[in-house]
Length: 386
Length: 182
Image (cartoon, rainbow over all chains, first blue to last red; front, side):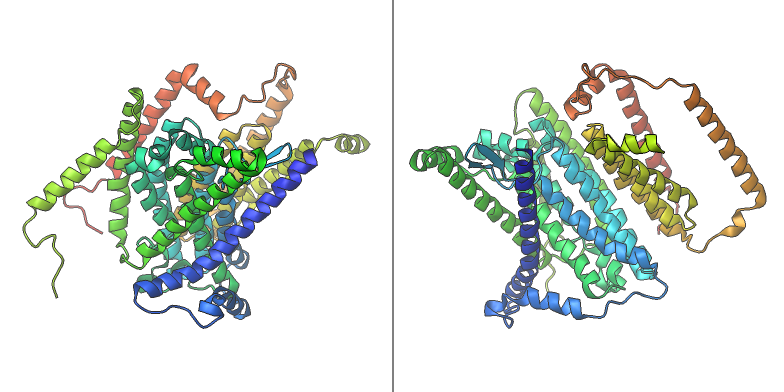
């Protein structure tokens, strides 16, 4: 029995690992296709049908490039940097529940790497370690631009982690559990309007912005800002070490999309999930019906994840990069006070058993925004005309 | 020697894990002190914190393990690394280590070691009741109940202390009128 559990766990972890890598691989392809679409061009279309073999060709190119280590670099740390980036990126997908459970005879196997009762803390801990890969690599390169990129990455990650944690705290207060599965199940119990995005609209926006900053994605990709820092922390990197850094970014994107989907969009839950589960178990028998319902939930969960990955790309090819002081102002002066307010209002709402209290902040913010837009002198808010 | 071997033979997998973890912990802690490059020292300290978290997990204190990683390895050590990178201590600064400083360090360290040895020799090793032991003591629910029940006042006082520290930091960092804008 013990061995069976161990083997199934190992298989599930390997499958999740493989899926994460596969999705990250094809995210690079999707990114270029999305960029092409948004800029009215075709994107990669030479390697294989519709350019589908492009990521493999890219990987091949990366492997055959010269693996160069600068003479003055600290050699082992230079190698350790990309390894750490990759390791921390891959670790966090372990606690994300990708589906309900598979019933197999008398066994019930949850579709999840590991179920621990501190799942959210685990994710938060791994995310807070993510910056080491960049810092160590940037410092070890012995290059001023790399060092500046590393320092930017560190200060940006620390700043946005606070708001990120605060927005998660509001969710934790509502569910009373740190387990990601419990959070998803609690949303499923209430139904469609129990999804985090309806109970925590402000928390969702804060979390999303912080996720962009933690992944070092545009508009917050200052650590690798090529107009100022050549290549930022990976200036000196080449070959697959550079590949690891770029790849880690896509894995981070996948994981944060998965976390957003499970915290704020009901995870593997979908509207009328309970009815569908009942109909399926009635039609196909207890085990098969349950498994089919799980499969539907998992597929829909991946649909949500893909939407957020697309959203990350959409923003990247739409918005320009922030300036560094703007980034810090946004983090410290807007997001942190707002997230603290969000926690307080959520707590006040919970006192009266009202889950939708934070909409009050959203309403006040909208009113303030409209008022300031109306007060501003004409032309000040409008777009500049050429 | 034979006793030691016999001891290792009757260990459970958890026991082996403990020994491996303890070895790595002590090793990385030694590297923290002996490393010449401050960056290596900080990285070794991060590794030490990881090992300590591993010990917490072995004690079934998952919450403490996660918080240790988040607070120490994730936040404080990033700040350490950040500061050291800014200071650019890359060249080994041997001049600052004068013989007086070395002698003082040896005396202080030696005294501390003698003190510790004396304390551990005198102290009684605590015993535990295997039957009454609750494996869920370290889990987050129980910890929360204890913190917000039995230790409410110290907990709140600690949070007030943090608030004061935060306000103080803001006051120090505040730009006064006439200060240079960077």
